[in-house]
Length: 140
Image (cartoon, rainbow, N blue to C red; front, side):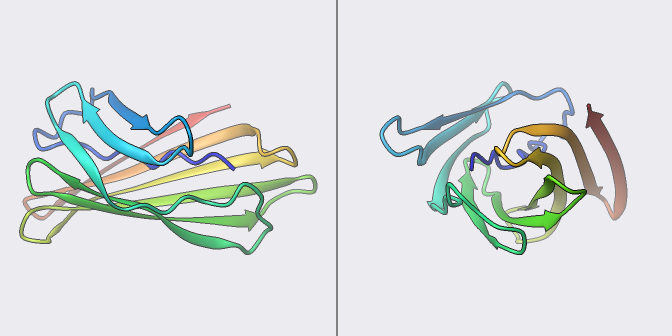
């Protein structure tokens, strides 16, 4: 099973961000993350999902430490969907250097029996100065 952690918005809260995730080609373990705004991160604890999972399975995703003092944690779960499909749900939480929650992200991928996505919904909350801004994107 291939899971990409929802990459949350960097310190300047720019929505137009591209994050590059570098992984070890031998074992797919993440080794470094960098975005186009200069934010870099290294894994704190590496948690790779299994290659095969059943509905009801769940676990942690790799947690990250960023060069601005922020940290990110994540989880995954495989949930029931329509016959022949399942929902792969990935959740991420981003904390500032004082451990205040500043963003949450969720990716729900409807996958077929081969693990291939057929429908993806991305949802994110940005929490800034006590105000919650949310948005979602759906790809069919």
